[in-house]
Amino acid sequence: MRKVTPRALTDRPRVTVVIPCYNYGHFLAECLETVFADADQVDVDALIVDDASPDGSAEVARRIAAEDPRVTVIAHETNKRHIATYNEGLAAAEGEFVVLLSADDLLAKGSLARSAALLRAHPEVGLVYGFSRRFFGTPPPPRTTLRSWSIWDGPEWVGRVTRTATNPIYTPEVMMRASTMRDLVGYDARLPHAADYHLWLRAGTRAAIGRVNGVDQAFYRVHGANMHTGEYSGDVLDVEQRHLTLRILFEEDGDRLPGAGRLRDDAYRALAREALILACRPYERGRPGAAEAEQLARLAELAGEIWPASEDSALRRTYERYAAGRGPVVPVPVTALRDRAVLHLGWRRWRHSGISPAVRSL
Image 1 (spheres, rainbow, N blue to C red):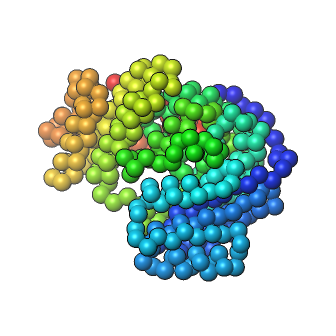
Image 2 (cartoon, helix red, strand yellow):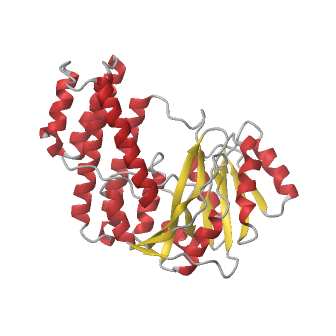
Image 3 (cartoon, rainbow, N blue to C red):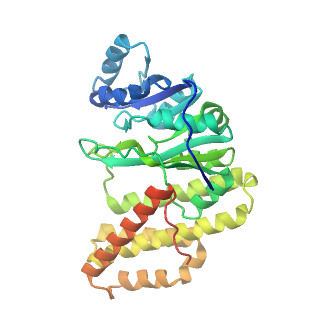
């Protein structure tokens, strides 16, 4: 990875922002206001793809489009689900660069111009991302001091990311070169809960990856309609989908990655360790109920499926001791303080570098 000095745009590249929408018509006006905030620096158009929303979102989108020629609308008569909706919009995008922005999320002012400037200055880069801030209700004031650009050789970035087995990108902060997106043929329907993670990794097998540092590039809205429910079952699904993502990546694109076998083993080991940590942690806070304990047992089982050597690890023995009612040996307030410290340090590293913190080997 190399850090480079940012350059300003010298022209106005065309950027298409694809906005998938399902029951988010009440967010569209605010979303589009942020999309067009950079219209003085880039030639931006927006394509809203409504997936048969029953709340009248398509009519809201049509009213907006009738008043603004930069906005076009595709409205489904029947629900096609999110992957097909994303891919339809991306396939119809006409810009040189493309952004996928959920109707409930927002762009930071200047983000389109900053990302486009990096892509224009570095034609080897196929995907640019940055920092996306989570928010409830009203977005906080954005950080606005652009510090640097990071440029990774694609396989180097893939190796850094897969070694942690985590997804360092939310989505609204991503801009891709349209030619790279066409080469990737969009999101993979086999991965309904991890298709974004898979797309970023595949982009790194075909092009360099860039990051805009120091500023907020987007705002990811957290609200009742997109918050996960059923915490432990959600963890099981997340681990299963990331495992499938990694398996598909190494099976289908491993020939593009030097040392793919080692990278695969590192990724599986890290994901298995995370599954065991997730299985242990609730026992340190109290005795989970029967349904929750069943999901935690599934996490421990998944760890063994992903990386068989984890069956003989200290973490596995800790889980078995906890599940049998022996432990934890650390007082709950101490574990809570530890978890908060680990999460905060990991968050700071991710915000600064764009790569999630590594998970220790089993």
